[in-house]
Length: 390
Image 1: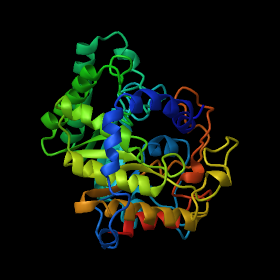
Image 2: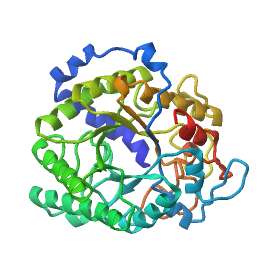
Image 3: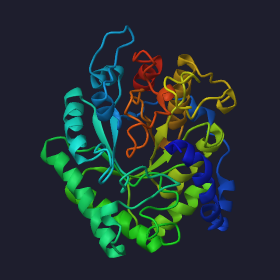
Image 4: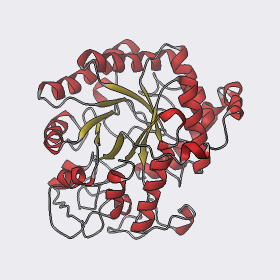
């Protein structure tokens, strides 16, 4: 199954039982959170520091022949198009030893040099896996399979320091770093799953320590999915804090077709920023510009029933969603919403650049959620992302 359909189907549902059920008393206190953001706050014209795009698939896409065009059809370097649109940060996922050889240090380094030339900040997203890490999957890298908890702790430190150190040495230090990706149920399963918070905390601390040892001024993010689930966030971050895990920013995935209404996400962000004294960032979001598919793979978003009311699957609907997400982040009380990042905005369709790193024939189930259309032209949502609340 495709990565995102797995996340939203069996995996996310399965994790709901141990995660929410683990701490009913904590989850029940969410009733104290305001149901909506005050109008005075929501109406403020506040600039967002982070207006990012995840571009992890770009090197593979380009190697398979992808090109990118401005809105008028002129071909250009996609990073120059992003920079000219006002994008502030690019998010780059890092796998350990992926089967296709992409999304690793060897591909991150040249991409980071291009980003620096374009004037775009670097946000590194460590998955601590050879493939996708999300609420349904947190598979240990093959090379780490036989390590015990102490060995895994050391491996997390060494891997994190290796990648961030290489970025710093070549003059392209990261601005932001995620220690793990969509960590609802932990990482490095089974040793670091939700039933072993002592191990999970040790792994997180190792990654955080490596990041700060390598780049003392880097800002660290801990990231969960299900951005509207306040019970999940209170349970998870209460545990993290109780184990002494010290981080800088709370990251959330928030997709309207999976993670509940805007009001729930707004209430959750207001609550967790106040409860933990940390700002938040919407680390992943997206919306389709069409329900059609460019390849023969049935896209994740393919039916009108999946759409959010008021946001059609059109270029204008996609841009409207991005304005709404920007407003959502801007309305977090106390200026604690740093911004947001669009997931895989450059993952247009090219044969051979599919979702499965182990299968070159796998398709792309995401191209109708990219920020470039089926003719490779930048969509209006890209400029909205970069310029709105800039």
